[in-house]
Length: 505
Image (cartoon, rainbow, N blue to C red; front, side):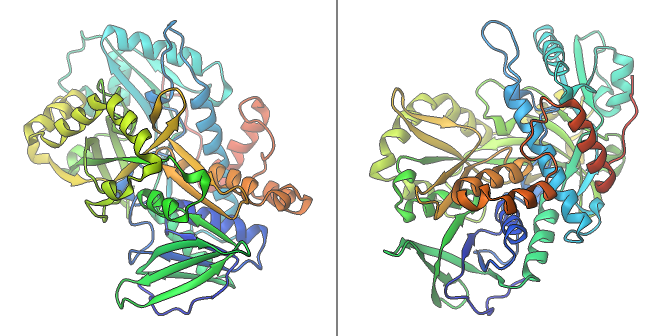
């Protein structure tokens, strides 16, 4: 896909930095809202979606909070907080509506190339964890977004749901699981490349690979001067854009710092790497057909919640377990070990020191993960798959994530797990920082970015009408409107090829 010789538009309306799911989503949204917009897209690698959006680099769950236990924390009084889960579930419904629009308008290929139905499950063992899951199920099913969630402590039922995980397990042990049959498996790499393929075919859009943005400077007239280097030839170009989006995954923080906008001061980044165990035995792969999440170890970051994950990658069934966390000073999988030290500036030194001091146990945990032997990793896997054999699993490097460090008046600096859009006051530049559950909620995140950076156009009847065409539930609360949710899910399930799943109890 290398195309280093495509001519540059010297003064485009929009520059998108990074060819991942966020840039692809924003590019398609903007072209649908204003088809005459001109867009230049720059990617330092030679293919789209090669970092965080790649299928092998993310969990691909279609994060909808059905099974991710870290989205529903237990409060000190014993109640379960579900607000984050509700927000994520709503956001994923927005994404499905947008993807359905793209398919109906022949912007994407057939849906089964990027999305498939797969049950989402949570599985725990031990009296305390079972009680937590029981309370979580009761709390979530009060909201119609989760009304079809099934719960069971019956070993016979669990055997039907997760036969591979029940083989050799002591059934006298207290255990429980929940199951949502409407879960999905999403290949965000395929989805991203499909959207860029469409964008390249529209008037006024150029996608450049092997091009690295080196400098960003706002000029007196408000435009951004973007300095780009061809990594193959060393040749440099300048483009002047009205709006710049920095959607470069782990590479976003250094570029935000180069923009020098006041809103970007004080942000730091904490890189977290990961590894998968990938099953190489077809017989084992066939025995498991679900995405099953457990509880994270004490001190583990949210992105390291263990899960046994059925995937379909490049048309082939795969089974992954992990991710095993790790520590690297790289901000990108293809980045430099100097990324972290180079990101430390006077304006973010204090927040990073304070956040670092309070997260020493996390650092120790990550280093301990790096030091694990194959036998150590197998022991963790066997908590999920008791009969797992080392020869059936290969170690593979997963994606690199950069968690957000923010300045805080009371604590000096805090480490946050999630995503955040940082935008200039004049709306001329925006950057996306953070990680999970970014890809699954990309459409909602980018709509919020459009509202913030293009406020007048966003509020116009023309844009609002178009957004409602793309996302029929726009402006309404899916978490409070059961009938609307039912209509939306029926519509997207039909278009995306996600047929209803009968109850398994």
